[in-house]
Image (cartoon, rainbow, N blue to C red):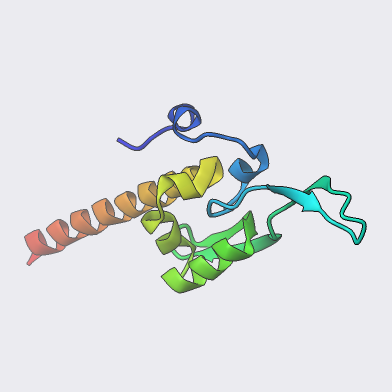
Length: 127
């Protein structure tokens, strides 16, 4: 029902491979020219603003260590936590690591839903 990691490799292109190993929210390496006063242009690159963070997942009930960009961190705060971010964000913006975490969160939510339904049925039968 949920995409596995092998299917994700076909789904997500990887021009910036490192972006697949964290929550980069679509940010990649940028290219341009370094232009001094002499106007002699040389090629250079700009890397995304990456941070290592521990974020608490309400669904999984433990901290997740992830590499993420400042853009992803702002979006996580906007969505109200890592769980909502993982469930609401497009797969193209999550990358491999984000999709792996999304699958974990969804599976745990389904287990919790199934357990609450069983408890409800048992309490309803007892009454």
